[in-house]
Amino acid sequence: MAEAASGEDNTVIIKKYANRRLYNTRSSSYITLEHLAKMTREGVDYKVLDAKTGADITHTILTQIIMEEESNGEQMLPVNFLRELISMYGNSMQSLIPHYLEASMENFRANQTKLAKAFEDSLGNNPLAKLAEQNMAMFRAASAAFMPGADKAEPKAPVSGENGDLSALREQMAEIQKRLDALGK
Image (cartoon, rainbow, N blue to C red; front, side):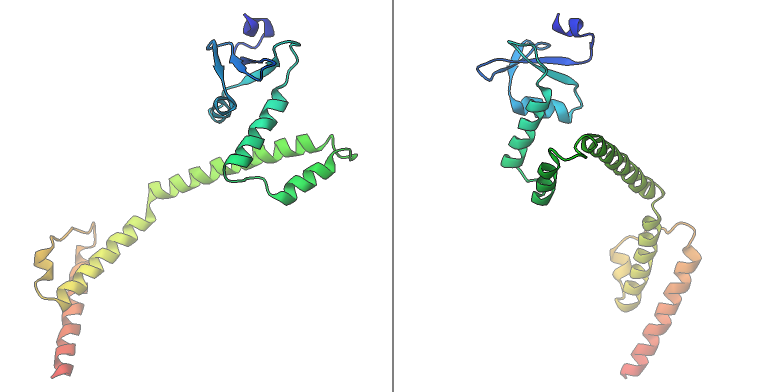
């Protein structure tokens, strides 16, 4: 088929006809720019060919997808960036810009992945969970000291390895309560 002839078995061939319709040769169905945007987000490799001439028009179609996304959704490309990009056309540095933008996007993706992994790792170790557990133990102790019977209404959760500290904290809170009671008289 057209895919085998192109030598790229993983690449989906999309044909664009003069009537502006896009035809997916793999699924044998007509698709829209929205379908192509979804395929792009899913990482599907595709090539768009002009059905009449066979010319590769993938770049043009991807640009159309960006235009559609920018006009229909939340804009991602700032106006100043677009102005700078347009000003680079015809500039002596024009040939370097595509490579620079590709490298920048690759670095952005790599940093995004590293940040996500670091965030997951920090939740895996969960140092905040221990802190939250200690805070809850102190809160329960304070509740028990200031509101007699509150500790009976709510079941106590054992604090791992800190039962001695919790008992000492309760004793201190009880002592503080006695002093407050004495001051109030």
